[in-house]
Every structure is written in structure tokens, then in C-alpha cells.
Image 1 (spheres, rainbow, N blue to C red):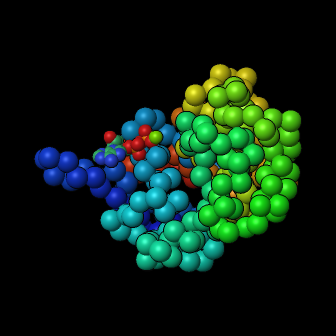
Image 2 (cartoon, rainbow, N blue to C red):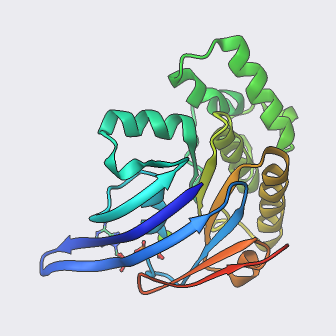
Length: 227
Ligand code: ADP
Ligand code: MG
């Protein structure tokens, strides 16, 4: 369901071009829990951003649900991203002037869904991440781990087929990290959503079904296991 073929990307700086990803090929089955592992600077965020359609690669194909998103026009890509792709940021990216429930609803506002439907769906997801009672609070009234759970609920509200998360526990302590990973695992089982989670921690990767390891922009390992 998620396929990358011969993907390469470089960044330009004052001196010229610096290759960041070289000839990446991978296939991720539907409903899989995937870790994207590698040391700092190995290209994890770049690969994730490319797969999520946040950037265009120099070369290669990125197939999601059978469609090559690299070839989409800007408008088509924006529409595809809204309905098929979710994203979770390390820094949560919640809007401070909206309540927790309004933050979760936001993607549906852009899709023109009615307020009553949006509200019901947001509340259900907030329950699923254990925050049913916090719906009326504002982000600043929650802990970091709770804010990340809000951002997870928001990423799920459009029922995307795949959710990309860039170091979602990077700002959290170990205990909270374990809680967040457990929630993602549970949502993966309940909703069959594919998750691709960037991490530089081997312990997190060990809990995933597929581990993709990047080294200096090259995919050096694709390990599949039954968890
Ligand atoms: P990771 O997420 O694994 O730490 P990144 O994908 O962020 O790695 O970065 C990979 C390499 O690409 C690094 O050497 C980084 O400095 C470089 N890089 C990332 N983004 C840019 C950019 N916008 N412009 C130039 N170089 C970049
Ligand atoms: Mg990164």
C-alpha cells in the first residue's frame, strides 16, 4: 500500500548539491507498524517528509494506495494529503487559542463536515486516546504527553490510510514515551491504520513489525518480524 521506488533527493547549498537520500526502494504493507531508524542526519525526516508529500523528490516514485503522489499537481496533492495522509510532529503543533476538541476537529473543518458530526467524531477519538474529560481545555493546560495524544487524535480524524510521525516522543520522558507508543499500537490494531514512526531509539524500533534503517541516506536494512 506504500511503495517507494528509486527515490533520490539532494539539498542545494552554497557549494553545490548534497545528496541526502540515494536510491531508496521499499514496500510497506497495509496496517503495518513501521519504524524508520537511523542516527541524526541519516535522512529520516527527509524520507518521511517526501513520503508524506510535504516535499517533492528529485527522482523516484512514491505510491500510496496505488497512486504516485510525486506526479500529482499541487492541488491534487493537497486534496490527497487531506484524505489519505496523517502527520504527527515532535512538537505537537496544536493551536493554542483552540480547545482540545476544536484542535482535533480542525482537519474536518477544512473538509466542510458539519459541526455536529465533527464534534461527535472528535470526542470519540479523544476517548480513544484517554482524554475524553479534557475536551474543553486548551493545549497549555495539558502535559506534553497529553498534547501529543491530542495531536494523534487529530491525525486520525480524517481516517487516513497512513500516518507519518517524526520522533513523536522526542520531547517526552521514557515513561510517557512508552504510553504514547502503546496508544499508537492500540490504534493500529483497532483501525488498521499504517504508522511510519521515525525514531533514533532502537528500543522503540524493536516493538514495530517492520524496521527500516537508514545510514547516510542509504536504506541498509529492512527487517520484518512478527510482534
Ligand atoms: P534526520 O531526520 O535523520 O536527522 P534529516 O533528514 O533531517 O536527517 O537530514 C539529513 C541530511 O540532510 C542532514 O545532513 C541535513 O543537514 C540535511 N538537510 C536536511 N534538511 C535540509 C535542508 N532543508 N537544506 C539543506 N540540507 C538539509
Ligand atoms: Mg529528523
